[in-house]
Length: 201
Image 1 (cartoon, rainbow, N blue to C red):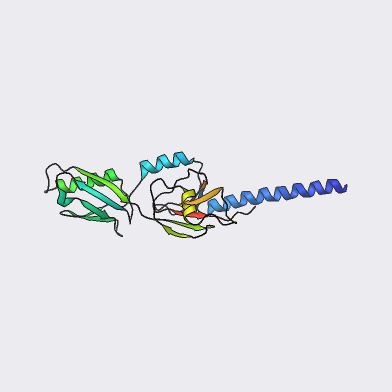
Image 2 (image 1 turned 90 degrees about the vertical axis):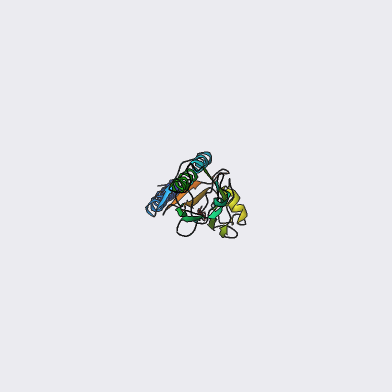
């Protein structure tokens, strides 16, 4: 075998090994509880708006129309409830705003008001967390419309080792991370834990 053929064979072997390693790494990530999502940023944002669920630390404003003394601002506590005048604790964590409104109306209707009408809105969302290859990992306040790139910028930007093409996000209602393409529109939800991984190539 000529020296040229030997060099080509060696290069092919290296490429094969790199491909094999990449496949094994992906398999290991999935085995370790990292799911890979193919959703675009816009699809994720649309799902986030329709599926948002309240959680511990969210601050909500409750308005009972015509009943100023029953209205006010409340925080979802560590047990997942809010404590309201007259009716006491109402479970809020894991519910949508519409479901919370209905639960409050049902409680008020039970011996207190004939036809209660309730409106609920989020005033302040629970914080999100960012770690990994960013300048200043930690806890940060959430703002509506937040994207991963905004979150990274708030945390001091990427480090020189950062993989700026993918991001790992653990949702507050999930035990596992999901892998997403890191684009300008990849959204962040309240309570998310964002991990910027180190690049290997």
